[in-house]
Length: 242
Length: 208
Image 1 (tube, chains in turn orange, blue):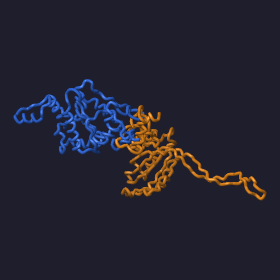
Image 2 (cartoon, helix red, strand yellow):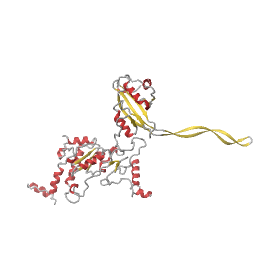
Image 3 (tube, one colour):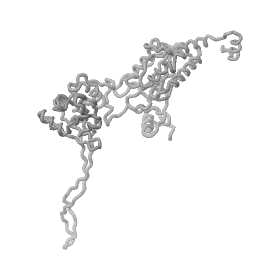
Image 4 (cartoon, one colour):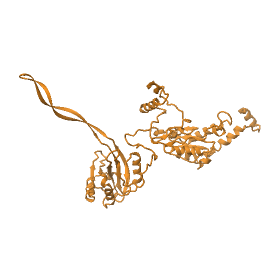
């Protein structure tokens, strides 16, 4: 069960599995995946494939039993490319010199070796929507959508046509994470200025190098300040490196 | 030129009032410093409280908050200056008529405060405009703002009208307009005005 009781809400909400089944029954071709949250909050969520996201969202809002008429919050998540190192047992044929009855003999022996393999799991950007129902007094329902990757396929359908309240927050996600919401009425940067090129909330964001003066510089701030100082023309660090 | 203080008091007891043009002039200037009516963040709430009856900034002649930079003498930078806001603050300062003064109020306005290592907050408005009085605090209490205001009045009082250290409006060669930073692709351009911000890093370079 979702934590409806924790908010003092009377109505019991269906489980995410039941909602998933309801969505699949109502919207043909909807791809919905249940993501279980193992933490004590047990706030499970539904990942919706972006192809059918608009229909799913419209169903969640308009279905008389679910009636998610209120979008309380939406936010972004950056999942960077993940390098996974795993140990795999590999059996291979090895040529070995073995002491046989007739002296030393070369023989092919099967041997099991541990091999470390590295693979890269491609990252993506994710938008997370928290839905409540004011009419039914239940919620939250968490739905998520993922982009194909983090670089060129960063489009998701905008849910602003379904919940008007999504407008500014989708703009904020566009501004800070770089997810492009298709169908958004006014997709512009909202916090940073228009000419700004970076997406500051992404994990690989490189912040501007303006550490030239720190009154109590220590640790990584001191390191950054020293690095900046060494690159200044005529500085001691520049002279040393030259 | 300067009148001996003791002599002045003595003459005052006898009913003779002695002053200099400079004293009279500065007395007039410091007694009606009108701040500009704008606030940037939570420090502005303390600034508003300072003007209200309990703290009553009117006692110092600064109760008239002007909604236009053209009529204001004092800019109280009260709060976090984001990089997006910084050009507007500099532009407002440029639009103020001389004599003009700046009080940077609170940790954010003087250094960026808790947001100093953030990507979006200016690390002190003194990177772009000359600041007369800095007030630390998060936010500073109204008493601190009054203290800063009194400090500014003392500063005005001590300004000579001629020669070295005279106010900018009496110095034809003084810089009148301060460059407004532009929005760059990653940061403001330039990141500081070297004319008012020639500060070296502390603790860096001299550490071996």
